[in-house]
Image 1 (cartoon, rainbow, N blue to C red):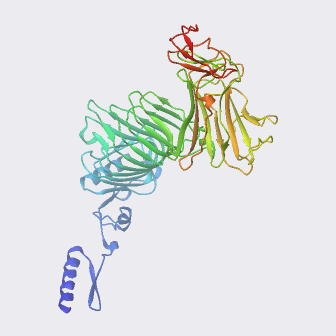
Image 2: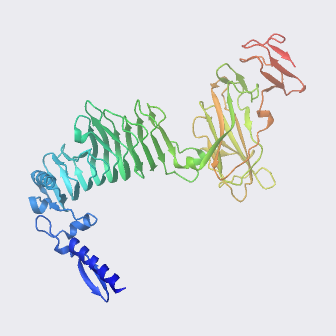
Image 3: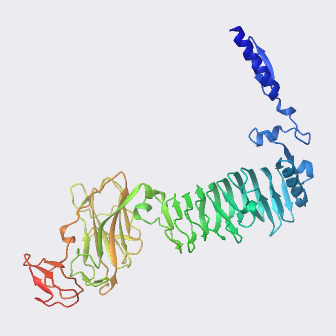
Length: 523
């Protein structure tokens, strides 16, 4: 045992000698102690205790732009030369560039090139139209930069590969690539942690492609985002970026994703020609019923292909089409609609197109009507536990936008013809309403108007399943007499719902004529 301890202690003495540790004896054991960081000096002979903390215990040497080159953070003195010279010194000596707290005004463009580690704790104030350009090398990995604030002018970052960059505040931040300049050829595989950025731009130029791909962005509050240049910038992922009342012009790029975006307020979003598969996931809803009403959709301009704005709740909800009408459908009464070759015309106003049986209201869900025309009326009825209609208004089981209640019929209805928007009805359990019934009719004063389609959609959380029975009368064409209008195809069948319910008519030809024995036959 003593021999083993002697060997162990000898080994620890060797380690202490090589790495500069001190030793302390406690009983039979030798304990290593770390060096006194206050005794560590950088190339200027300064203590680098603070620098060690800033660099997460890294012992890289630091050049302090204020102490070494006379930078003054009073917001008045011109620091263009001081910061430029400090950056050049840091590059030549493989040191970390450090700019301490203060306001550093610069009258000219500042270029810092080839510095692997940068810490700017102060605020850089660039003159109007001037830029702070920080460049590393796209083919070297990996830089580590922390930039607290560039309050005016522009901050341009280039030549980053597999690096870590923090920008806490900037009036304008641009990630820039130039295909003809080797050390600026691309920006890729980096991690960016962002704060408040008024304008964020991804841009490239050159005769050869400059590309900005495969980067991860965390946080950030932005007002303007621009993605453009001479090449499509792909697969840049943004997590939790605060976007509300903002403008996005994504002109060059494919498969870029924005996760957990608020999208409150008025937003302008444009996907440019040639872009594809870019997705924004909205995380915020206006109120607890807006999703079931399907009013969370965000308008945008899509000049590309398959660019989308989705809600995070799309992951947790399902939409089922429970009823659909178009020119090829066979599930409506011919006294209500006229079948045309490519669309449908309204034959009578306020004719019933679809009506559910009683639906038990156990879990929250919504019913949405979607059409290309606002030529429909929607009615909702509430029933108690005994399946009797409730003729007093209930205010806590639905939220009809613009709806009214009729005390005579018990109908909750929209006042005007609807279809293209504001047609969702959210439903949620309460103490009195146990069942509901939903009905949709042709609109008031709508005879002769045409539409292409009408879809009735149920939306609810994935964990629920609300049964909705469709009556047989909404599954096939019905009429009291031989059809005399509309466009028909050979093989079509119409059921008689008049006095003689045993009759049905089968179509023999395709077209608009209606001659019994030639175009129709009694079956």
